Every structure is written in structure tokens, then in C-alpha cells.
Length: 311
Image 1 (spheres, one colour):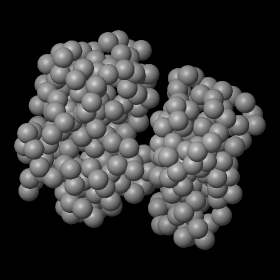
Image 2 (cartoon, helix red, strand yellow):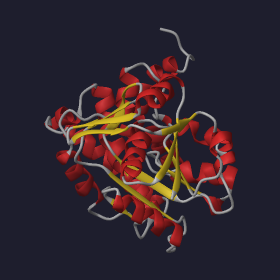
Image 3 (cartoon, helix red, strand yellow):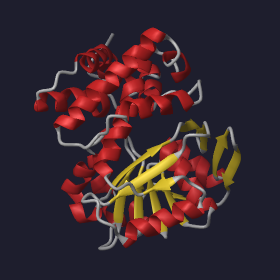
Image 4 (spheres, helix red, strand yellow):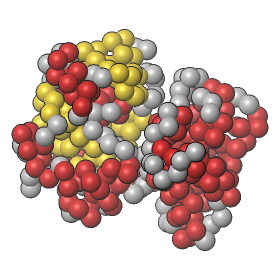
């Protein structure tokens, strides 16, 4: 398959490198010093499982020079999804489909509004990966996976072909029977412990072990569960238990991208995670007091990072 990684950040860079190593034709869309380093030295993944170097990585900052691809894996931040949909048009042919990797539950609908629903599937991934330096992705191995599926949950050859490509690459991959449920389960996980971690400015090993912050994580997850169910998502009674189990298996030094961005003074995905829970909860008539507290507490730093406040 010819696959474009649109946004070679932690997730896009990590999964794209796995596909390229397995022999798939992968084009990395990147920019600035990151692009320069990839072109000069290749794309390197430093992982607790070992180092991987894609020495001849094909990289560009111009989709026009790339041409049509079979699949676009979208690895940009959530607030960049709509703009990216327009920018990736030169990659999109009649049979191309886009797989969003963003945390949250709204990326597929944002892409569909620009590209058309037929060219978008639902997607999500799990990885503790980030750009450590230009051309280098740092990965805490042990919890990497990718899931995707048609928005109406039907079986399709295109999703199956991509699943097989990831399987050949040694990536844990799944086409879930209900992609919307899978998206909400992921949101419950990342926003549940990510919001608490961002407020506490502490990694997962700390917030899961202190009884006080662990209770907050569970409460946060239960609010998300209630919002999802109110919106018709078939979330199971075990959703919170399963999410806490995943948190307990994560590397103790792991942090979410929202935590890292806020700590670094960068724009984060606060609006698409905790902000979406609060907003969708209000629409559904479901109270989300803890998520609202987290959102309101982090909002000043978010607005500062976006140049809307100065302090």
C-alpha cells in the first residue's frame, strides 16, 4: 500500500516507521527542522524495545509533490484536523481513505465535512511516543496499538488490507465491531488520567498510586461514561475498570500528550478532550463537575499558550 503519514509526530512517526520497516511505501509529511533531519539522517525511533532507523525515509512538506496515495494516516493535533483536511487534498483520489489517529470523538466528522464521509473511517491509536528531537521519535514500548473501522461498522476490503499491512509490521491492530464505542473508550482512558495528570503535573505512575488522585481518575472516567451513554454509545459496565487496568500497566514515567504540551507551554488538546466532555455533557444534560473543574483549571494556561492571555 502507498501510505502518507500526514503529521509525523509521536503517533504518526512511530506507526509510519513500523510500516516502512515492513516494506510498505510510506511518505512522511513533516516540516521545519524535523523534515530536514529526516531527509538528512532518516527517521529514528528510540524505544525501550530497541532502536529503529528508517535511513531512506521518503519525506516532504508538500502534498502536491507526493501525489495520490491509498491511505492517509492523520497524525496532527486535534485543532489542526479541519485545516489538514484541505491541505491533504492532493493526496486524495477516488479510492483513498483517511484514518484519523487523534484522541477524541470528533475528528472523523470534521474530516467528513471537508472530504466527504466516504473517504473517512474512524480511527484511534495508543502509544506513549513523542518527538524527542528533530528526526527522532521517543517511544515507551509496551502499550502501542491501532484500531480503525468504517463509520457504519460494515466490513470493507480497504480496512482489511490496512489491517494486514499493520499485522505484517508487527503492530497490534484491530478492526473493532463498533468504532464509535472504541473511540469513546479511548477518550475515557486518556482524558480520565490525562486531565488529572495535567493538573497535578505528575506522570501516570504517581497519579495512579496516590489514593486521592486515583479516586479522581475513576470519578473523571465515570463522568465520561455517563456522557457517552447519554449520547447512545454502547459503553459496557466494565469500561472504567478496563481503562484503569490499562493505566496500571502503563510505564510509570508515561505522560499524555496534553500533559506534555501544557507543561511545555504549548497549545494542547484540552478542548478536544476535557472540553468536549464538558460541552457534550451539557448538550446531553449530564453533569460533569470534575471534568469542568479540570477544564477551567487548565484553561488559563491553554489561552496563554495560544497567545490569548499574557501572564
